[in-house]
Length: 185
Image 1 (spheres, rainbow, N blue to C red):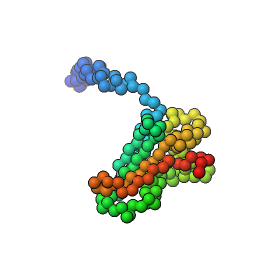
Image 2 (image 1 turned 120 degrees about the vertical axis):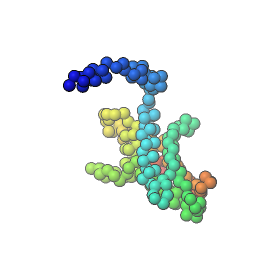
Image 3 (image 1 turned 60 degrees about the vertical axis):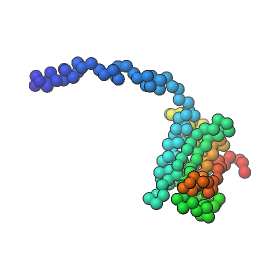
């Protein structure tokens, strides 16, 4: 019993390591950084796209490469899914096929079809709501504000699907808003 008490007292009296008493410069710098809601939203959107990529993979073919960024020049949020066709078959990848892959990438990125709503919502309304939620501060004070934010952001957010061959030569591509503008054509 006396030996155990001695060990506990000895460990407790050891000086703390310099890593815990003096913060490293990188930790100090990171604590001083301010994260904007745009930064946090892009991070959430990027994570959702990466998860969607893994869901779009199969044992026969890996999922697409993914990129998410804000383009300062255009003022748009860009989501890109790049599929590599190991056979480089341009005949199989028509514009229609690209459009199907585009919609599937949106569905998987925003988890459309996985939630039961009490009111019927269209595919595009669900996308806008999810987008608004990704770029909202927690806790959400007003869901109407989230819906309005999602609407405004959907006008500025584009999904680009690109299909390339093993040599990275483009076979097909399509780019469009993630959800059509409400009241637009």
